[in-house]
Amino acid sequence: MSIKITNPKALLILGRDRKPDGSIVLDQHEAFDLEVIKRKYVNMMDIITYDDLLRRLEHIISSLSRRAVAS
Image (cartoon, rainbow, N blue to C red):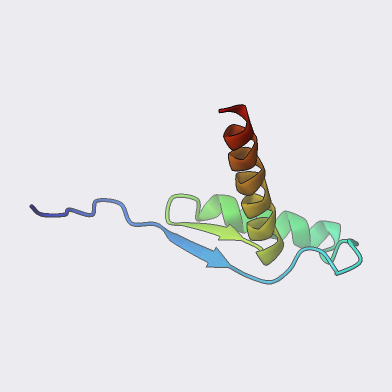
């Protein structure tokens, strides 16, 4: 058995996009710049903030919990 990696992709986690009180950290220009950078490197890496990662995990946990109750 052999493993062939054809298209490796990285996950880059950087900074926060919300303060602890829920207010937004990035201004409109900074958020636009981050979105441009995310789209530019979409084929090489996923660029997300720490808060994006937490939101993704919350959605995954919520989805799995709903599936467990439904079955």
